[in-house]
Image: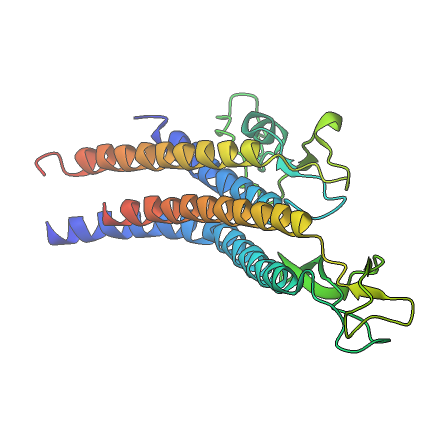
Length: 135
Length: 157
């Protein structure tokens, strides 16, 4: 249970990231026939988590002070957007959207979102047990 | 005990409010994009239908122009942080189809009749693509809805 808040935070970040990714998919599908439109995507969740800024640490004036746990800050919705296309997929009008790919992404995002929400629900249940075991 | 449960529910509510209601912002933006896309698709289908029924028509009188096909052009625009589509309808500048038919009331002195510049096969291909895009948009919208439902299920506990 020690790391439950970390897991919750991770799941929460994942849900946010998935929402933003789904927004990108929606924009790509919307522009499936717009000339010269290049489909966009977010960088992977792993890279997003690695690249985010860390929060302020507690200042240690002596070497034997406890080093507080560093919990990274929320991303504040600054997700890095990349262009996701292959040259051979470009249509004569310069559009790079592949509909099948976008729909597959959409499905994956839906499943991952469900997964993250289930993780949160289960951890909340565990917290409830810890607070009030008889219930 | 009631106080205890209240505390728990407060915690859950606080957690949820800090978590997903804010992130739904992205979801609602995505929904607006989808709605804009569907509106564009609907307009495109209407324009294609107009083109289709006017394909092959001729001018009423000699010297007049027959029906010029319509073309829909789309421009992306950011509106309150949401990407939406702005549509404009333009006329097809392709040359008219000419047919030699001296007996036709619309024929010019050389016996040539001008026919509409709409090509049925192009219209049908466009309509097909429009249909597919509408289906894809619906699919993405369904996923968005299910994502919303996941968040609501969390609130149910």
